[in-house]
Image 1: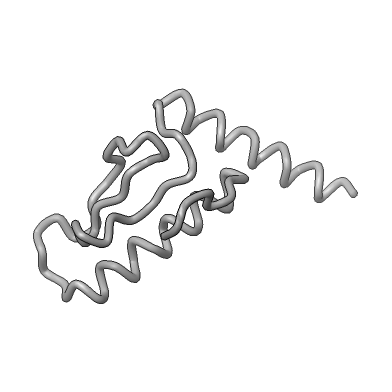
Image 2: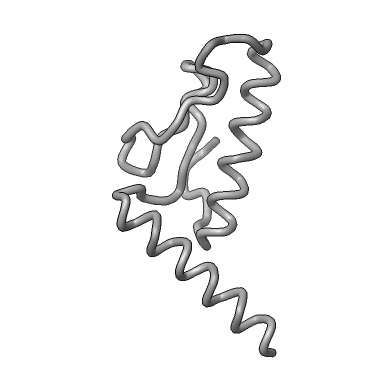
Length: 82
């Protein structure tokens, strides 16, 4: 049970840090702007492969992996279609 408490503490701290930076979960990848990730308020958070050096399918996959990791670690459900 101690491990679960540690996970929840870390998750809460991560979500609080994001909130301090005004990043609202869940994040999502904009499919029509490949590589662009926005928060729940449609505010830009980051862009994967800003120099467009990778193929779009790779960029989309990387963006979705990061979105999944941040949303899960922040304790968020998707809430909207990815």
